[in-house]
Amino acid sequence: MPFLPTVLVVDDEIRSQKALRRTLEEDFGVFTASSLAEARTVMEREDAQIVLTDQRMLEVSGVAFLKGVRETWPDTVRIIISGYTQTNQMDVIRAILMLLRQVNEGRAEVENGFIRAITPSGNRKAQALMDQVFEVRDRFEWRGLGEIPLSALRLRAAYAAFDAEHHYTLGYRSVADNRACECAVILRGLRRPIDCKLFGTVCTPEAPMGSCMVSSEGACTAHYTYGRHKDAQASMA
Image: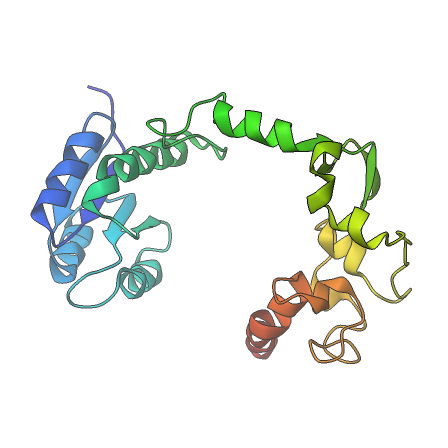
C-alpha cells in the first residue's frame, strides 16, 4: 500500500470533522482532534505533516494555536479555515483538498476551487454586458510600466453621456515621478519600499512624494503603517 501524507484536522464541530475526513481520506492519512489539547497529543504521538484548523476554536484562535505549532514543529505545513459556514461548506472543503494536493505534490499554482459557480469560460452574460458598454483603448500609460497597447477600457460612444472624459474635456499630461522616488520599480516588485532613500524620511503618508505613498492601499503606505515596525524588530534581533 503506498504511503499517504498525513493531515491533522482540528475542529470542535464533529460534523465538520467528519465532512473533512470523508473528503481527504482518499489522498491523506487523516487524524482528527476536537480541542487544542487533543491536537497537541496527536502531534506528539503521530507524524502529522499538515495541520488544518478552524479559526474559531473555543480555547484560543486557530492563528494562536498554529503559532505554537510552528515553534514546536517548524516543518509542519499549517493551514487555517476562516468563514467556514454551512452555505459554502462543500466549496471550502473542495478548495482545501486542492490546496493540500498542491502541498503534497510540491506545486504552487492558481486553480478554480469553486467550479459550482465559476466555469473556465467565465460569466458569459457579464462579459457580454461589459463588451456592450466598454471598448479597448489603443494604448494606456501605467505608472511604472509605461504605455501598454490594448491594456485598458473606455466607455463606448453610445454611453458618452456618462463619460467624465467627454464632460470635462481634461487633457492628459504625463508627469514624471521625483527622480529619487523608487515607486515605479516598487510597483514592479523589483525593490521594496525600504530600498527607497525617501521612504519614511521626506516621504510619508502626510507628505507623499510618489503614488505608492499617496493611496491608503499603496505599497509604501502599507509598509510605512505596518511593515516598518517588523523591520525594526528584525534589525534588533
